[in-house]
Image 1: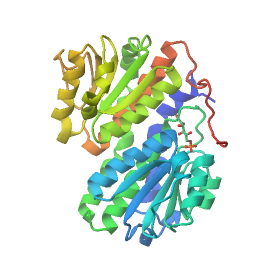
Image 2: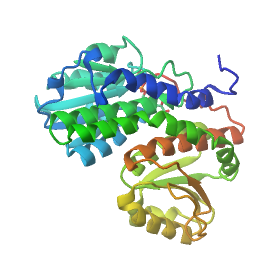
Image 3: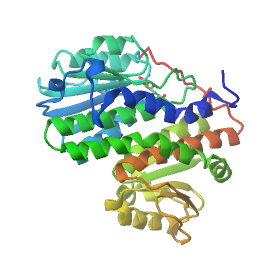
Amino acid sequence: QKDGYPHFMIKEIHEQPTAITRTITPRIKDSLPCFEDDNIPDSFFEDISDITVVACGTAMYAGMVGKALLKNKFGIPVSVEIASEFRYEQPVLTDRSMVIFVSQSGETIDTLEALRLANKYTKKTLSIVNVKGSTIARESNYVLYTHAGPEIAVASTKAYTVQVASFYLIGCKIGLVSGRMTKEEAKTFIENLQEVPNLIESVITQAPEIEQLTKRMTNATNAFYIGRGLDYALSMEGALKLKEISYIHAEAYAAGELKHGTIALISEGVPVIAVATQSHVYSKVISNIREVKARGAYVILLSKDKDITDKSICDVHISLPQAPDEFVIFESVIICQLIAYYTSTGKGLNPDQPRNLAKSVTVE
Ligand code: F6R
């Protein structure tokens, strides 16, 4: 069943190009987003005042990327809520509020209860779910199924990237119907999305290099992931992956936030995975990186640069294939998944069966 791979996790990392293609292709007609086959009418995406994304764990972090995209590219107010918090809070929703629930299993109890609560306030509930016919899918007004196929490894990989891809389709649709994006812009955006599977294919070939560099990570007790904008959003998922399968304490920080406290934790040899792929904040992230480097951090830098040899910036540079800023994050996340996987195996752990974790959390 592992098709020759040593673990389900690495098999599923490799399945991502196919999973994304399967998820996006039925939703693209004439290079534009189209949810006809999902029975979601265009009117569902019209006249939205705000969007709340509700989910847990990795699914919530997919929502963080969705938020960074939707807010900055399409000017829509978006908030991301942890389902276990949302369900016990007073929702601030109107009938123009869209609430998006993200869940691989479609059975996570906190996400389900949050959905039941939101259903009392708005008819604009949409779920992004992988498992067909699951409870969350059945109880939301509309459902957009991701087609990742069964995900066996406890640590989510392919389910996350298809969730993120779904946000790109939804964002583009809302951009179009709200007039924030022209048809031409939408076509270019979708054509770039269609290139993502190829981008991922080319990044996966760097796996042996990543395995080498993680040898340095296996001794770490702490690690930090830093970035700005979309890079910060994906860093949260990068940190979670490392935590859950390698048991190394890892946190993601908005790069500009470090100096407000966290930089005190940077000492000789602490790994910092720095993601600097967003042009408008590139120079800012680089200066944040110099700050941690000057304090002894072991910096692994992910960027679109061909080569960075300046040792005052990083110890290791991972060069990502050229892609527009919004799409390069699909490459960065693959690198983060590989870092977590090889750190786990390098420590002699089984990444498929992390301690204390279950694939589906159906109890509170
Ligand atoms: C981490 C992971 C979890 C799940 C979370 C939500 O790798 O898989 O954080 O994302 O438990 O599960 P679903 O998506 O099934 O609602």
